[in-house]
Image 1 (tube, rainbow, N blue to C red):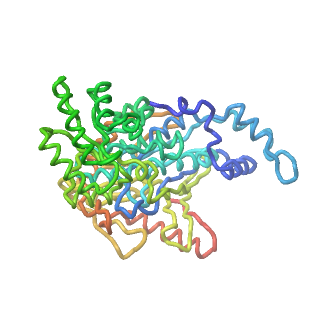
Image 2: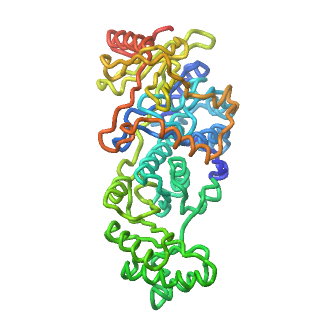
Image 3: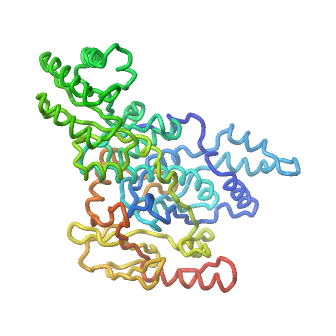
Amino acid sequence: MLSLSQLYKPSLSLLTDFYQLTMAYAYFKCGVTDREAVFHLTYRKNPFGGGYSVCCGLQYVIEYLKGFAFDESDLEYLRDMRGNDGKPLFDPAYLDHLKGLEFSCDVDALPEGTVAFPHEPLVRVKGPILQCQILESALLNIVNFQTLIATKSARVCQAALGDPVLEFGLRRAQGIDGSLAASRAAYVGGCAATSNVLAGKHFGIPVKGTHAHSWVMTFETELESFEQYAAAMPNNCIFLVDTYDTLEGVRNAVEVGRTLRERGHDMMGVRLDSGDLAYLSIESRRILDEGGFPDAKIVASNDLDEGIIKSLKEQGAKIAIWGVGTKLATAYDQPAMGGVYKMSAIRQTGGDWQYKVKLSEQAIKISNPGILQVRRFLVGEEYVGDMIYDEKLGATDASTIVDPMDMTRRKVMPTNAETEDLLVPIFRGGECVYDAPSLPDVRERAMAGLSRFHSGVKRFVYPHEYPVGLEQKLFDLKTKLILRARDVGQNGGDEA
């Protein structure tokens, strides 16, 4: 398993936006660095116009937090910063504070592979406000991207209706680290393998691939290129057949496949990478079957995504394996996840919590107060709703949930439902207390979780809105805080 310290030898503590450090400095100057705060990482809208997200990135978060410390090169860089008066921006005492800083927060999170919905906390951080603040940008960077790609992968795999999907996105991914994170997240979302060999090495993801057009063009004829490849790698023969004439390429593959069979090997199949994939796959299947290769697989690539795969399925395409690259590894149709990180409570050490809300002219941007947990309700084999509740106010299995965007939309959660609280302890006092599952287990969690939601939630166009709401007591508290803050014209708090 790849750790961030292996991928990045230098410290990652400056993987933050500058304003996190300036706020931390102001906390230090004000003498409130140890004031306790609670922050939640959430998102407001499902990506891709879909009905859900698949959480991903927690393992990277754990590695990042385990290694969180400012080294001498970080401090030297900050020491050289200047304000607009030409003087040092940060006091030496602040840099000494950073030098001695040891991560000591409590962190709770949804396990990777958990299906999530808007406004639910994916990560909760509780601890000294200076530490919570500095962590913001790195946590968002990690969780936003990997959740985005895992969700895209789940959608693509759903469209493939159980056919294997291979992630082919390395060459178009957003840099080296982006390609590795994308390969990992795509596997979590359901992909069966990757073309990225480094990701295969570090994460244990199966690696698949054969040859490119350049191999075919190296030889005088396509037939010769297939013969030479079969001679070199008789146990890895999927022939790319569209360099010159696709259907003639399939016939050449059949001819070489017969030779392979005489030598005790099987041709695995052919790959289509251009043209009318529905028509070509149907005709290729006919040629393969008539040639005596009914078990040979047809692999398709060429800028595929869930929409194209769904269409090809509806057209009766005879494609058995799908190679999806650019549009998966780059989340082509939505390049960013809108995750946010907001403070929801604060207190003096040992004091009572003051719950906080952030106001906005847009209701969707008003934050939720409290120390939040998510309870998921299961009736039979299907999830029926999620309740966001405050751990201090508590909740009962018979609670009413209220849509945070529309107070008239309410749902009484069934008393006969099985329940599960989704946020689990990851760090306590800065020490990791979580036994991370294997990547295959994370992948299985995602697929098993998705299978328990109504098909309408997974619909690509106008999906059903899965019921998620605030527990009644939490909704009432939020309303009270909003009204109070609007009355005074600024954010306010309430002891609870």
